[in-house]
Image (tube, rainbow, N blue to C red; front, side):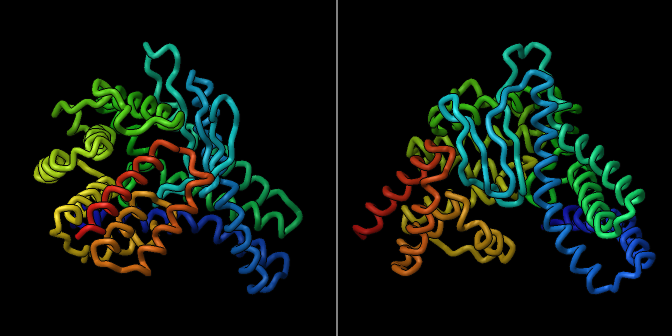
Length: 365
């Protein structure tokens, strides 16, 4: 992590702590006036924050959905934590899916009329809902005569404010760009709006069972002016690299990865990790694998190995290369467990094929 990222993370951490102060003071005052001991207040606060994590995340994503629908977007999927409600063959289906570093996501299909290319309200909808419910929760906390309800509302207001700060201020220190970062990029660089729409179209294809190899070449914008706009622009590089991997053009994929990393593109840490995993996969196939030693990357991989297919694939192929049968079985079971409720069938098939290719090659050696 470079100095700029460390400084930004420190600043964001300070802002988030300051965001906790209003509700923290309010909860203390409510408990003092009601004569409630500190320990019960602490337990109620922890319980309230646990509920707020789910409730306010659900409302945040509902905000994206509502304002997306109001501006012409079409519903594709709605996720809170690892539970995802997606549209499949015109029907709603419940499954399991998660992206490390995120607690929710609402994906929409692009408007039928794309001439005006709306983007702001869809991206800002979650923040708008968090602001509305923060005000409501603070009103309940101030006006309620029930101290327990007031403390519950104050805790929810705290979480709303945390989400407003954490999602509204442009930031990508967690490895994923937040709403504020996406809005700023599209506002500054109109060309990023086209990529944003292409991403939504590609996600819609994937939700219907398509694979990376099925993404049209014309949907991937590799012009330098686009690639330097920010994380939305550089996502084109990931789509292209994913296509090469899915088409099993491993030599081209390796050369492309090296080219990407040799240039000063504003890649997200998440994107860099995905490229690293594919490079390590190719290294295993070529018989020149070296273990990942970066502690932050290893920590991320350990946290994501049960929910991210590409991470499971990395551990599986690594185990094949190192002839670690225990790790191999562990990764195989994690992969199988995800299959039933996984909403992107094409992606699952892609990863399964890559694992089979590695199995066939490395078992022979």
